[in-house]
Image (tube, rainbow, N blue to C red; front, side, top):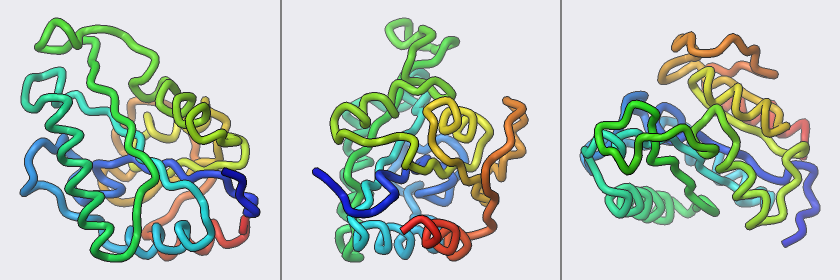
Length: 189
C-alpha cells in the first residue's frame, strides 16, 4: 500500500504509551488507554499513516500469560479503539527474555527491544520505509530500538518517562502529551 504522506509509519510502545500502565500488563482489567492516544491515532488513520504497536511482553516468559493471551489483550485493545473510530494496523510482541522463568522463552532474540526484529518484520509485511517513520516510547529501550531501526524517535514523558536508565540514548524529540506529539508529526505531513 502506497501512502502520499511523508511519514510511513508510527511505531508505538504498548505499556506506558498506548496504555496507561508502564508496568507489565497481563489482565484485561489493566488495559486502560492512555489519555490522548486516540486523538493521535485518529490523525494518523486519517493521514493513512500505519500505526504499529511493538511491545516486549516478558509476562509470557514469566508464565503470567500465554502468547494467545497477549493476542487476546491486543484484540480487546483493538475493539476498544474501534469503538472510538480508530484502529492499529498491527500489533507485534516479543515473548522472550534472557532470564525467563519458562525455559522455552529463555533466550536472547532479535525481536526483544532494543533489538529491531519487530520493526523489520513490520517493514517486510507493510513495505515500510523506516527512515520515514517514527517511534514513540516511554523507555530508553524503545528509543534505542527506534534509533537502531532508523526511525525518528519521540520520548513520551508519561509511563517510565525515559527514567528507566537502561540505555544511554537521546530521543530526537520529547513530549509531555499526545497533543505535543501531534504538533511534532504535523510538520511531517
